[in-house]
Amino acid sequence: MDIVSQAKSHGGSQGVYRHGSAATGTDMTFSVYVPPHDPGIRLPVVWYLSGLTCTHANVTEKGEFRRACADLGLIFIAPDTSPRGPGVPDDPAGAYDFGLGAGFYLDATEPPFAAHYRMWSYITEELPALIAAEFPADMARQAILGHSMGGHGALTIALRLPGRFRSVSALAPIVAPMRVPFGRKAFTGYLGPNEAAWRRHDSVALIEDGARLPELLVDQGDADEFASVQLRPELLAEACAGAGIPLTLRMQPGYDHSYYFISTFMADHLRWHAERLR
Image 1 (cartoon, rainbow, N blue to C red):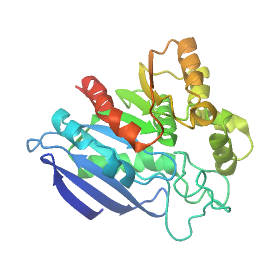
Image 2 (tube, rainbow, N blue to C red; image 1 turned 90 degrees about the horizontal axis):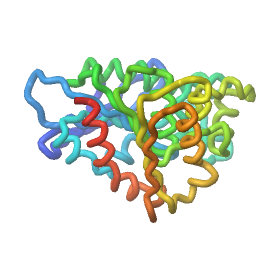
Image 3 (cartoon, rainbow, N blue to C red; image 1 turned 45 degrees about the horizontal axis):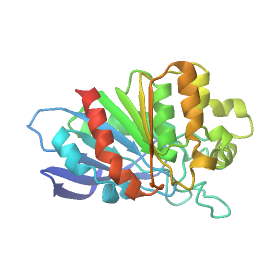
């Protein structure tokens, strides 16, 4: 693991790191904020998964999470959203919603993407092992949240790995990718045309198929240009109601899909997670 940069912030350390990934076959870059703490103490971990077009840098630079993490004693981890580098295939048309920056937190099975687009294995196996080895992280106390495509990732990972995360939340998540253009394009390209294979990467389908969460917090801006066609929060509300999953879905007046929205509610989500990580 190479140190790309480190800086002191709110008494803790904000670092950016790079390592060679066995899962993706590429170098991967991620950021970690470690709050001030006594030597020898292990701290709870919050994973943040970003959305389409993003890298680790978007939330690191614009998420406004460090003061809350310093106050609450939380390690904050921001991975990249896809593999990058020479030989990594992209969308042939150069679209932003597929290929580089749009890994959808799954392991692709279709060529030419299957060789490198293994974000599920990277996020759920390889990077957690690295974090546990290199940082003062208490891996028995983990939480996960994400935005948009990253909200999809956070929800599906928590639903498929019951017991790993004490809490899960999302900001404007893609909740039913099988039913929206973003998801259908990605799933067809990465997983092929068999929609039965898509269900394990769709939050609403997973809930319909029996997966459960103890509770869920979701914020959604009512001025979000993607809400009605790509995000469909009402489908998550219906699925949770049918499954008896306590969902707090907060429609936030006037907020869009941007980091102005994310940064506004970030500290609130971190406080919610901290209560459950104690």
